[in-house]
Length: 434
Image (cartoon, rainbow, N blue to C red; front, side, top):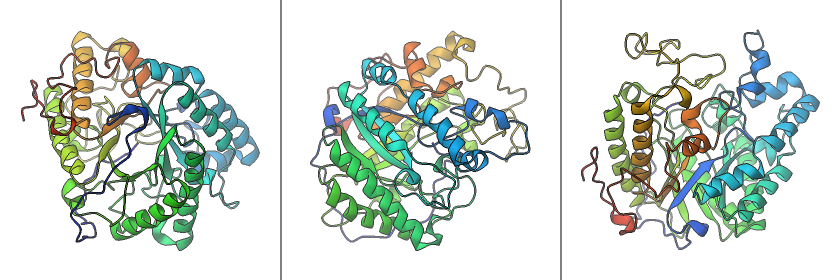
């Protein structure tokens, strides 16, 4: 999950080739449309998803804010013990069976480089792979497909806690970091090759931050990753992230001979002022703009929206970082120097039990509008499959409360035919007119 929603002005390297990367492989059992969720908070800790793991440090002088500091504080023995307990309970076969029953066809599994390319000098611990493979087998057993996502790399590609280490963006400061990242890609590719009918795609890097990296070097990494990946998993799809750049920055991106490569973009409505201050109707209208962006991306590289949610506030506990407040109510310092509007409160914002009829209806509309928009591309993955306390990020709970359609095609407000030409969808609803 990204903590910023920044569209950079850095331009990608320009290629002379204008034909989009071809895709001959269909998306597993899901056909042309991915409808899935993320298993976030499993192999890369985020305090806001599972605050119970971090609660002992709340209010202390110990700055435990991510998986790096979690393991550094506990030591490797105790960190291993706690994480093994977490890995064995956070995602269960029952969860996977539930996701299948909700009509989904894919699961995206974030994992850190340290599971495949460990460095004894780092505090991270290993042991993730048996749990990863068990989950993959459950996914296959229940008729789903998996995408394995390299969510964090050495030095951090974005400085977010979801990269494993909060702070600086230092991924490109050493060749060793790049080499270990390739090693991690190769490790994931080997897993994918062992489960070719289940793992149909691998994401080689999540959310590289264009504002702290050389975009040219990101592209070079993608090219090197493609070569390494293809040798080990020739039948799988490779996924690259858009680095928070706009569709126009990707229009001429192509590499001769590339095949079965898709682009990942993320859409959230809460991390920048322009989205956070919107009214409910404006959130729906803004999603129409996202649809146009996704469609524009999709004309060059098949594009999946790898992360989105129903959140319209940033009120989830520790969403902005351990012990940090929210922009919404002004408890986090930000450009408005106060709440989004006078009297804005975080009370009840993340609890389904506190939502009235109008709020519930809006969230159902927001879910369907986003599904419509992202299916103007190659599909979507909701973030997250579940959380300990933030219901607007909890797909299972939202679906069980009828705030997300079950199956995802069972839409009340959708105005286009899901059986029509997949690549010529025109949105036509109260909020979108194309």
